Length: 392
Image 1 (spheres, rainbow, N blue to C red):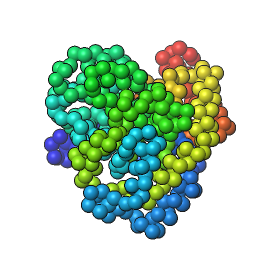
Image 2: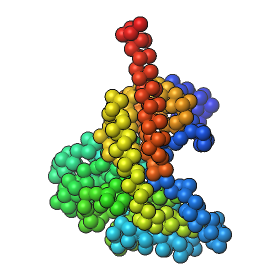
Image 3: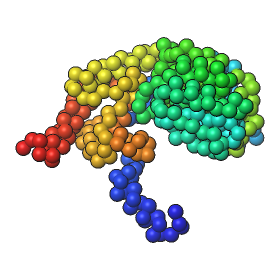
Image 4: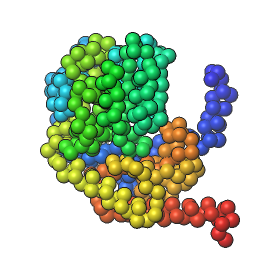
């Protein structure tokens, strides 16, 4: 795009023409939020907030420098040890954001000579991380098709390093990656399996330890595990877990770790408290899963399109951008916040309501949402039929 007023105006006009302009809306406490990633309800937990406030009073509002200068605190150190224990890895390394963690992993471990194989619906940060390696040997396989990933590995030059890259739980569809098959294929070809489990940790698995726990996979199967604090843990930041050599390589090579200010110690303290609650307040996990079952049963009972997701992410595909926007606006009028997700976040023709459940929701609130969805979707369907001349 040229640096002219006309070019900028034309770009914005094109976004508007395609109904793709995004708008930020302040949280409205009058609406029940069904689009947050706060799966366990820890973002506003008073004890987690108190832990942050207490640490801020003694350690300040910020770290003051990068980890390798003077920003690494005792809180960071303790959090990394506790994350390593939680994920059953030798070490963990805290990053300032999940995006930076994903960019840092591939920048440190891969180069332009390596083969990079990723799911077509991977998170944008994984896609960008692969691009930044500038490797010409990049391939994307059909979503969830482990056999296709294995075939790409088989057909690759065996003299090159190889990486299989995937989300653990896909953020827009809520389904799980076929990690068992991907791990087997990666091990057979001595490839790295890199799993971003941002939406799995705290949610999936008997103890909420994530997708690896769910599939019974160890650090040998998944040598690079990435997680975030801004989802189930309710705070901010991210981490990478792996063996000692993997983490040491990241400390020495990951530019997004080396050249940025460390996460505030107070955020690390709050995250430690949230991690402790995740492990000891099992009712959060159990209640969340019961809500997922209740919601899915209610969707089926009402004849609305149900997804294949068994996680708190429950997408309702509506197709066009206008339909998704109209449904989101109508739900807001009824007191429910559910954001419309449109391209380029999802493929063209798959705009949706991305409904997410939280341990803070009650069965009554979920039932209210189900009733509202039935009204909104069926009203829209009747309107579409009328416009097409199907009904008077």
